[in-house]
Amino acid sequence: MVIFPATIAVAWLGCHAVESSFPPPQMPQVVPTGETFADAGPWSVAGGPTVPDVRLTSLALPPQGDAAAPVGPVGGPDRPDPAPPGSAAAPVDRPVETPAAPSVRTIRLRVTAYCPCLKCCGRWSGKGLTASGAPITSNGGLFVAADTNLLPFKTRVRVPGYANGQWVPVLDRGGAIRGHRMEVFFHSHQVARQWGVQWLTVEVLQE
Ligand SMILES: [Zn+2]
Image (tube, rainbow, N blue to C red; front, side, top):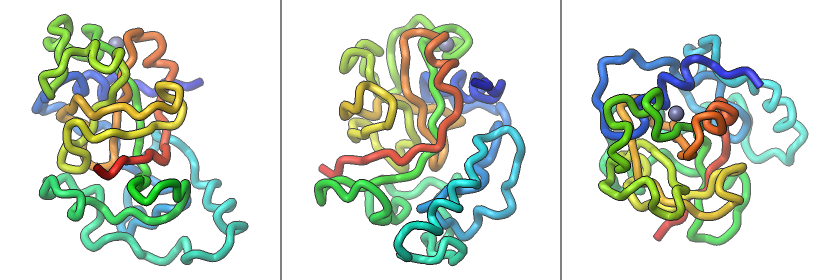
């Protein structure tokens, strides 16, 4: 498993509401299948997850929209400008996968991981608190950091491969966590590193 240095840099900002001048490590790049952002093209930066092949699998699926057609929301979902916290302003979710309950929507996110250590949280390390004010022991230490313009605090999400598929709350955020980014929390730095960078379809509970 290759760990990108940017993973740590991103995680470093994830522990609390750090408005850092640290440059955004990477813009979201090639958007895998299911998400057809109109502006996905220009950001082909190296260093991120390489999943363009997934597009091939989408061709085998029943035709529910041309993968090349820009059907994304107007303005693009990855703009850093804050949208109103209402879910209606969030990027339009599409019934791509897991059509589960009607109260659940899915969203494609770049998911990294962090822990409460000095490397991950910098000066916030040791305080034991998330940006929402909840302690890092909340929900058994199972929670995520997200862009609260997209997913407000307390929003419950389900991240593949995290927390045994349980619903976990958004309790944290960070200066580098903008747009379609998320960080899952671990108590161990080692485990956080092993997580790496993953583009995942995250379920969001609409309450
Ligand atoms: Zn750490």
